[in-house]
Image (tube, rainbow, N blue to C red; front, side, top):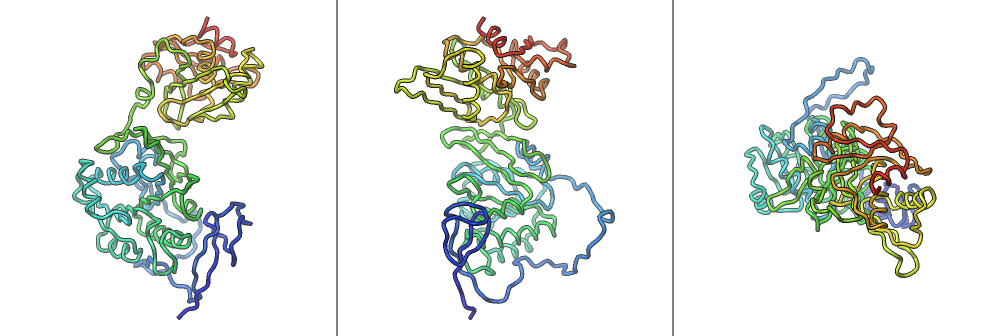
Length: 455
């Protein structure tokens, strides 16, 4: 029998140490070392054994033949766009998110809606009856969807060989274990070895694999960081369980843009795709209310009209509070400094609260003009005129800087029935506004924008 010994492995970078240490000397993270039992037995082969055992020879790069394989249509517009146009054959996609956010529901609903593809759904967490009850609730039927409840990687490859699926789903990677590693499922070594074997299978057979992954309390994918390195795409499924909206973000994508965003609405019968989120992100009864401004933002290639809410009040306890939900608090503090220094509004002794409606988190600099307009609207208790929106980046000297894709922002505002939009003056260069049915107001500085909004 092989002699076993204990070693401590960093769950963030995979570095090992003979004893436990608080701070990893390689990646610098604290409290990431976990104990694992390793054996001195001879190294074994991968859990996946390809049928073609011929050795691959190095070839010149100009001798490599390429073919544009058609992407697999997942019959889910939001997911297709986030993936870059569909599922690439032979790709490895990792979907992470908080417990109960809807990861399994999203994947099961997607594979049940695919037509003409054989799908093998491997569940390591739920029984077949639980999956059947969820499928009945989702009201989707796919006769070519096979379910197997298994946690052994070797048995999973046997089921794959017998079924010959076009798409494989593993829920979740932290529950799968292989006999080649003497540690419990979910450990660093188990996740590393299992994901490496699945990657080898996906690349050699051209079968796409969807992995569902847990996240830790910091919000990152649980397990070694190498898991995110070896997969082709990492998707983050976000949202608040108290709200009905769910957001699918692309963190890494070798076959498309990482700036894409998909929005879903959680319902009793599953997730509904939100094709026009601007209508849902705007409340229809804010007329006459101060502290509300509509900003035109861009996420990926999609334009959004987002409601920005602000509340400014006198500091009750002497020290003013600054709070922002869905917006960078540091950028909000910078905008408050611009208002005080360049425009002359005294906000140093006032509490400022900012909220991006709908649970979105926006990083577009073009939100600046909407943020400061909402803050001043609440400070002066004056409502912004109805059917007015704005877009623009605010500089430290108080100027309004141009933003990208201004035409998309204007067309989105026109489509939703807005009467006028404030844009940076320099965005007018080379832009034809005669065909538009919306009034365009160019502004150079913050003071000009405030005169247009509040008179």
